[in-house]
Amino acid sequence: MAASNVTLCGICDSQHVSNVANYWCPECDEGLCSTCKNYHSASKASRQHGIISMDDYKKLPAEICKIEQKCKEHDRKFQMFCPRHDQLCCLICISENHKECIGMYPIDEAIKSSRTSALFDSLEKSLKDIKENIERVVKDREANLAEIKQQHIKSLNEIKETRQKLNSHLDKFEKKL
Image (cartoon, rainbow, N blue to C red; front, side, top):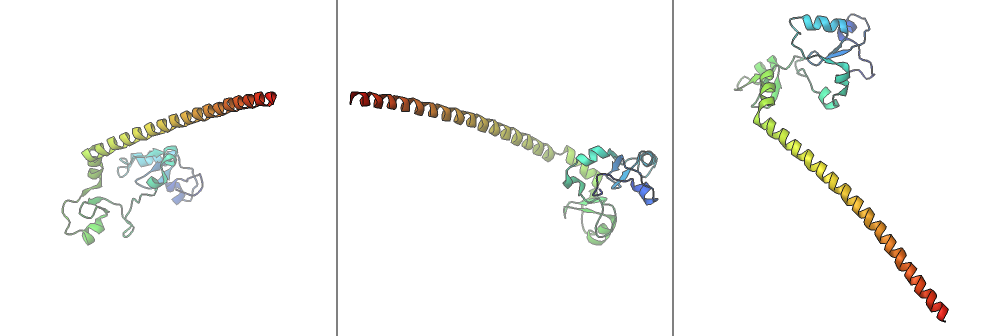
């Protein structure tokens, strides 16, 4: 995404026309104006792309936006996942570096299985438990702080009372003298 707050439509920009992008295609890694979005959604090659609004795209964490969509070495789109190397691969990577690898599968299958896997469910449950524990700890700490404040006020009042009694007692001694 561009450094400024305004992102231009990639298709229009390639034709030297400056139109503001209202949508983002993560697969193409570029912005789209409303007109180009309609063509993009109609094209057989790109109609399955998950287009999102630019507002939603700007809300994504920076780490998500930095995820590479293409192989740096070959400038090709990642298409497969190699479980042996735990690595995304383009078709050239497969022919050059993963000839001997067994069990490679398309990224789409990896995504589907990761969403439905027991490990994913277990991780999600663990995160919920951690969140609940953190909320409970925060609540306990807030209660502790409130109790400490009450004890502080109580101690100050006891000191005042003791001082008044002491002063009163000293005043009595002074009168007797």
